[in-house]
Length: 217
Image (cartoon, rainbow, N blue to C red; front, side, top):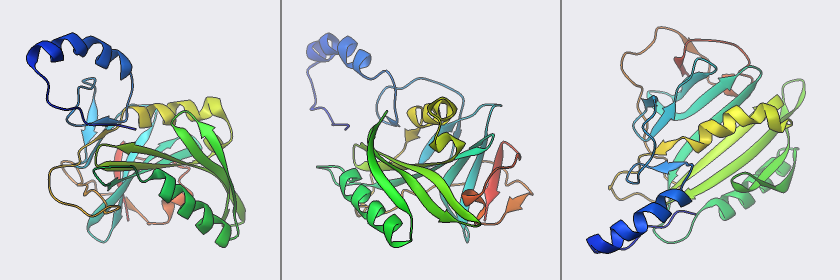
């Protein structure tokens, strides 16, 4: 879990800079903390690394971007960022709600320890049967990042590695405006809008190639 540090005297900050940087070798990152300067697409509330190895798409409800979908071969990663309280994280509470929701919908889920801490792994109902899925969560300073991995990557650790690396390199831009806990952090579509769009249910079955940045409706 991320914690904000108290304001330090210059001498103290210099003395502690090296061990602090060493302790934070990977993210997800908060926009206000030091993080690697990489090629990322700026979506407002999130900055996502880009690569020719996968597609980054924006999920849209109406005219409002609501999340990010990263497609890698026959697997997908969905990312959503939310506001969180100043003290304490949301993942424990959200994880309990997710588990109950999956079971109520006829799926199965169990708690496991993953690379980001506790996560949920199981099967959810899908067209023609069930779909393997992993729910991951990261508590940041006044924000919470929820990730959902589906497809083959939900079952194979090696296949999941590239998508987990995307999570590690996300930069969350919370902003300073007051927000209620679990309120979505607003995103925006970068630059010019692409001509191609897709139906909103694609993230549940997103195993197709497309432009690097596209818009899901």
